Image (cartoon, rainbow, N blue to C red; front, side, top):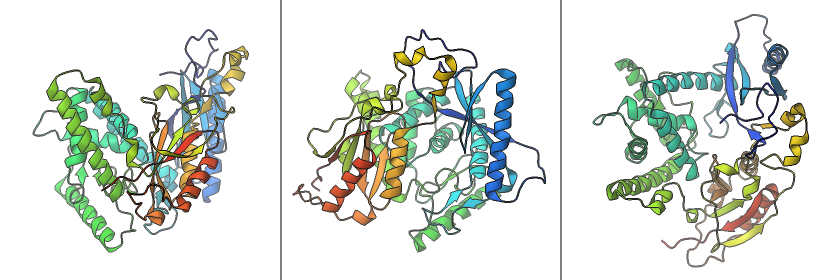
Length: 444
């Protein structure tokens, strides 16, 4: 929905609904003509890009009255109810990879320019498919909501979900393409749970023009990735191999996640949800609890759970089901910060239009910042699972460094290391963390 403050003109101060202080940007890629005047140094290239973006944003402000905000890395333009984040793509950096040259999961990543180009190519294909099948959009939104609701936001990217749903329309046999949200959603869950991810790449052919040679090349890439992973389990190899015309080696969206273990968990959850959805459809009745269970994840499947203050989420209105843990052992409790508020207060609207707009925070998400801090400080201790759309709970599972199995018959024997880690995480998230609970180990 358009944000009431992200407009070129003045602000209507008689707004009846709460107005969010945060807004997500829409990325806009700008490609300039090639020139030999660009610097060779990578840092100098980025500074030159920023200078170009500032000139472009300044021109939009002077000629069209658009407001823009600038940081060292980004330039955002507020227009027609949306924030547009301007990005310049530079051809010299398109093929580069950041980090070291080996395939370590922590060290490999695409360059910013390469990522930008891949997102542009992906968006072009998705927009064309959405034009052919109007029901595609609602199915994708439902699929993304399911992925987030079950705390898989760090596991499966939005682009990967879009490719999986695209496959339902491009290769629907033995059925027709989906005609309803529920049908498409069920097929999405079945695809996740039943596809042979270990032995087959999923080829998403948007234009139906993959040649036999290209398909053979994809299969060769897939087999090579599997062989390299068998030789070295630390080797970066996609457990979910998604091949497209613009990405025949599955490097764009699933190169580093899901891992094999994460994919197993994803398959288990999708199998359970598909079975429940099938049961609800066959019952042909209104079971509100059953339908809610499709988007309500059990918090008992984690080693620990972090509950967040709901009124400190960037978009608390997106929260589906408030989380509570009454039976589990609480090891940390925290008070809510008074610094951040997700909505403007009535007093803020006494400011003039420009001052009010300056308080709007583009792409600010305290939950995402908190998770990034956990991953930096405790990458080997815990794995974080969360809902990027609007969840108030983070699931934590023990990492390789803390892989000792907890005894199911004695829940009081949690290691001191785990408790110290959780208390430190509570300190890192001070002001955002409501409580942290250790989940009782289940008997097997």
